Amino acid sequence: MADLDERGLLDDTLIVWGGEFGRTPAAALRAGDGRDHNATGFTMWMAGGGVRGGMTYGATDEHGLLAVENKTHIHDLHATILHLLGLDHEKLTYRYSGRDFRLTDVHGRVLNEIIT
Image 1 (cartoon, rainbow, N blue to C red):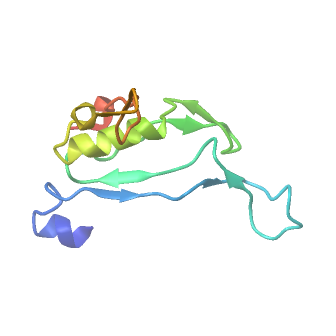
Image 2 (cartoon, rainbow, N blue to C red):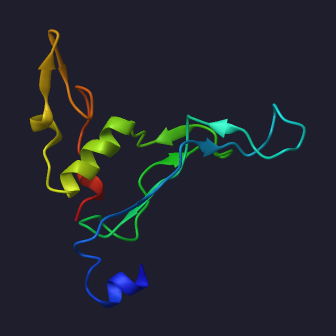
C-alpha cells in the first residue's frame, strides 16, 4: 500500500481485504484446534479509491462475537464497493420470472459515512 501511496495511485485504487467469516475468540466446538467461524461479527478493511482513511466503522461486543454498532449487511458493503467503482447498484437491476434481481439483491445502501 505504501508503494501505491508513494506513486499517487492510492487515490484511484480501491483495496478491499476480508474473509469468508469472522473468527470467534474461542473454539467451543473443537478441542483447542483453532477457533470457530463467526458469521455475526467480522472485520474487513478498505483503503484508497475514495474511502475515508484512519477511521473505524462499526464494532463488535467485548468478545468480538456479535456486531453491536453500525451493523452492516453484505448488500451494503457490495453497494458501497460498486459505488466506489463508479457503478450504481440500483441501475444493475434486471427482471426475471416476475422478480427484480441485482448484485445487491433488492437491498443495499451505500455507506456514505466511509466515503471521502
